[in-house]
Each structure stands twice: as structure tokens, then as C-alpha cells.
Amino acid sequence: MPKKKTESRAGRGPLRAAPPRVVILAAGIGSRMRSSVPKVLHRVGGRTMLDAVLETAESVSPSSIVAVLGSGREQVAATLRGRPVATVVQDPPRGTGDAVRAALAALGDGDDGPVLVLSGDAPLLTTATLSSLLARQRDGNLDLAFLSFRPPEAADFGRVVRDRAGRVKRVVEFRNATVAERKLGEVNAGVYCFRGKALAPAIQKLKPNPVNGEYYLTDTIGTLAGRAGKVEAIEAEDWREAWGINTRRDLAAAEEIERRRTVERALDGGATLLDPTTIRIGPHVTLEPDAVIHPFVSLEGRTAIGEGCEVLPYTRIADSTVAARSVIGPHCDVEGAKIGERVRVGPFARIRPESVLEEDVRVGNFVETKKAILRKGTKALHLAYLGDVEVGAGANIGAGVITCNYDGEKKHATVIGEGAFIGSDSQLVAPVTVGAGAYVGAGSTVTQDVPDGALALSRTPQENVEGWAEKRKERRESTRNKT
Image (cartoon, rainbow, N blue to C red; front, side, top):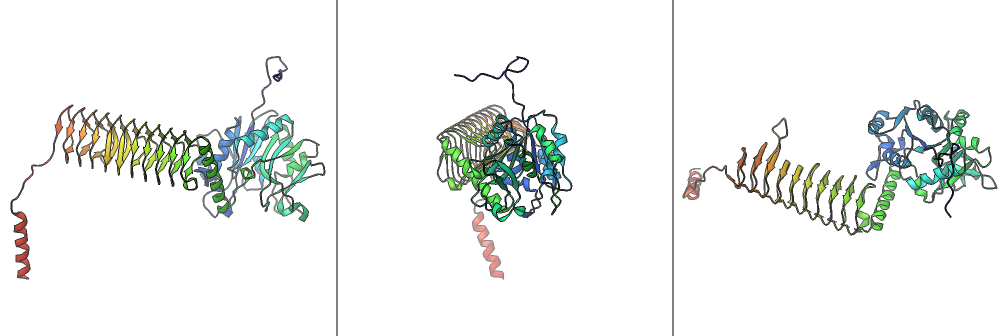
């Protein structure tokens, strides 16, 4: 029997849950990373940790997001331009509680809706876990639901302290924990979902730590837990999601976890990965069924590999689409390109941004394209550079052909008509058009338009000097005898 929808007070339909507001703590110095790059800008799975956390936050449709910046804030702020994220600065750094206090004014009015507080150095958190935390806070009308986990080694994480009935009493930082508390296996993940109206009063009650003067957000747990049943710790199903990155070793381990996730997703979707341990697949990459990925392939950015495609070893594809049944050969680099069905690329080809290879195109070894449109059935099989060019369907580009697109100041376009034949070692000096069905003789330099069906030649007449080699030999021997 279907559940009855809750009616609004005005009788106008079901009540809608208020969207969450989000605070992302990204002010950490990250001194243990031993890097001039702010910690949250180090990459896991091809994207910065901050990007990963932001994307997870955006997946739960928040009404607002505020990032708290500190050390290296200019670099961090630059990566947020164009995104719907407000920023505030915590200076000097005085702990996580002080960081949330700095964010409160920028959060906006969200009535009593939930406020999520996330760590910018926890890139492995998933949408499913965050959604579960939100649901538990809402369903239980909790002042706070926070995420806990049980790592194999609890190390220096804050410990979750419960009473005999299993209710959360507080979280104690490792440095302040007793010997008995340090033996507890459940630790704090640093992911919080507060009831909106409970957060500000709890923050106002924070007191500085007597040792370092910092305000700990974890102290709000003890404050709010004084009301029975109003604070719960939700244990993560996969402890790795809650793992914060503090060192290069942590970063490397997180990279491997993320790599394994994407590999498993590809396998579950029907792709064949011939050596999963050597293949790198980004979090935004999609693979259709029966795609075959060979060893040492890297698929990055927002890349889509179509059904039945094959990508051979040592190839990188980034921010590109490869349509069904195409083959990308070994040692190729493809970036920002659209590749149609049944295309063959490589080996050793470079397909640069804004290249479009329509169906049945063949691009061979040591061919480079840039902002090039190759229409259906075009062939460019050897040692060519095709930049700022549109090539008509069925055209043939010979070995060593160059579109000379740059005059030292501006780029210029070349147009090659349908069915044209460009002979080997020819240069097309843009702007220039070679008409449909036209021919360019091998070794030509074309500086003027070629009409449809015409033959363009720009060679100097060949001269054969009879007996030249023998005469040269005689001159050399004469010179040698004189010395």
C-alpha cells in the first residue's frame, strides 16, 4: 500500500524538505604534504581533492555552498571561479570550530534546514553516504548526525565516546584522549549534518582549547549530545570513504582506492580491461559495453568510450568522445576531440583539441591534428600536420603534408574539398582552398586556391646532369693526390 504523502499546513500538497546548505573546510596548511601547493589542490583520480568534495556536495542539490579558505587562498580561490561557491577567509587559523563560525554569515538563511560541514581533504566520500547522512538527520529530527568509521588502524583520529546504552556522548581528540579512550575503534570522519537552528548556538558555546587556543568543531558534539536522542554517529559502510588526506602516502593510497573504484565501475558496466592494475580511468569517464581497454591506457576528464571500441596500450584519451567500434592505436594522445564510428587512429598519432574525425576516418602514424575537421572516409596515414583545416569526405592526405596555418601572428584556415588528393610532402599555405576532386602533386607548395578538379604543381623543372658522379669522383682523387 503506498505511503500517504504529508500535506502542507495550507493544504497545497506535500511538504518539501529544505535543501541543505554546505560548508567546506579548505583552510588547512597541509604542512605534512611538504608542498607549496595547498593541500586541497593535490589531485586524486585526475581532479583536485577540493573538486571531488565539491562535486559530491553538489550532488545533493544544496541551496548554497561556502568554502572556508586559509593558507594559499589565492590559488584555491582561482580554482573556484565560475562555480556557485562563496568563499570566506579564516585568518589566523584557529581550528575547525572557528572556521565554521567564519562561514555562518555567508551561508544565508536556510530556516531550519540541514547544514553539511565537509572536509576539503576527504575526496573519497560518495553521494550515497552523504545522502544517507542527510536522510538520517531529517528523519530523526536530529540536532546532529555525523559520520564515523572504523579504520584498520585508528591512529590519531578523534575517538567517538558512547555511554553504556550506545548513545554518543562526545568526540575526544586523540591528543586529549585517555589511554582507555585511545583503544576505541570508532573514530570521527569529520563529516557533519547539523540541524540549521542548532548549529549557531552550539558554535557560540565553543571555548578555545587550553593547549593551542583552537576551537574544535568536535566540541559541539558533546554540547548537543546533552539532549538525549539528538546526536547520532552513522558508521560508514566503507571506512575508506571517510579517510582524510594528510601526507603524500595518504594521497598515493587514495589514488589507488579511486582507481580501483573506477575500474570496478567499468567492469560492472560491461567493459573489458585486459590488465586492470595498469589502467587509469577518471571518475567522469564512461565506457559502453564491449569496449576493450589494453594495458597502460589512461582515460581522463570527461571522456566517453563507445560500444565495441578498442584502445590499445600506452594511449591517453582526455575530455574526448570515441564513438562505437573505433580503434585508437598504441602510443596515441587524444585530447578534446570528437571521434566518430569505425575510426582508426594511430599508432603514434596526436589528436589535439577541437579535432573532429567523422565516421570511417583513418589517421595513421605520426599524424597530428589540431582544430581539424576530417569528414567521412578521409585518410591521412603518415607523417602529416593538419591544423585549422576542414577536409571533405573521401579526401586523401599523403605522407608529409603540412597545413601551414600560422604566419607568425595569426592562425589561418585551410579547406580541402571532397575527394581531393594531396600528394606527399606538400605544403598548403593558409588561407587556401583546394577544390573538390582536385589534385596537388607531390612536393608542391600551394599558395593559391585550387579549383575543383584541377591539378596544382609548384615544382621547379628537374635537371639531370649526365656523368656528374664520375666527374665528382675524379675531382676528389685529384685533390687527394695533390696533398
